[in-house]
Image 1: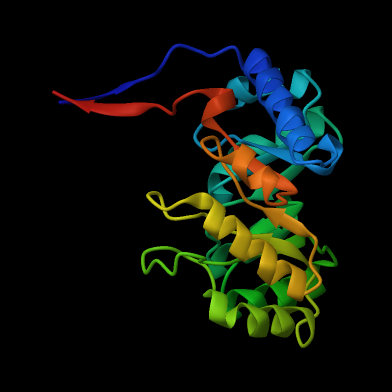
Image 2 (image 1 turned 90 degrees about the vertical axis):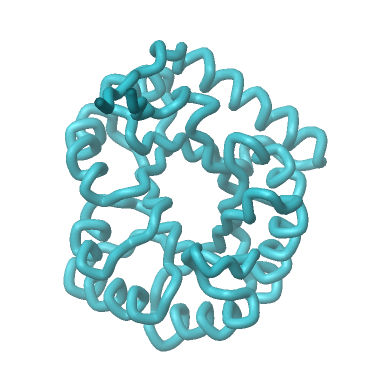
Length: 234
């Protein structure tokens, strides 16, 4: 028999404040301004009532992994809390492009020509142009999404030039067992030579390192909202 266990509800407001304080300390320690680092609070799999305390604490930037899940939670939340910005931080299928362009304010996982072309068509049709981060597979892992570092310059130029997509930065997820600093440094180097200033890198375990390497957006979920529900078989 498989049952779902739900961890005790965390103190979201206190956790959020603690993460924001860590961002301030990391930025100060790197000679950067804390206000130049945006916290993307990752709410994937968490229900709306777990998100409300962060909204009530005036946080306004959130990340979701799946379009369908975001469609269930976020239209009502965005209506109740004006000024909220929603980032898509998970893979985007081409058959969900219309919904993604309508709902999200930033798309962080632009990773292949077919998707880029579909986004360009939909943005032209809808008249809505959410900012895009190109996802770079810095570890060149076959199981992960993202353009390879060797192809990044060409892909960025294609997206910005021929397709006229609003590419504002780069995103990466380092391999789990690698030193993340190497991947953050590589992403920053690719961004610099392409004239891009926005870097989405760093999660709950390594966002302070990412800030030291120039992250402008850090994606933090579990440190704020706690562990996601887990299935237990017995």
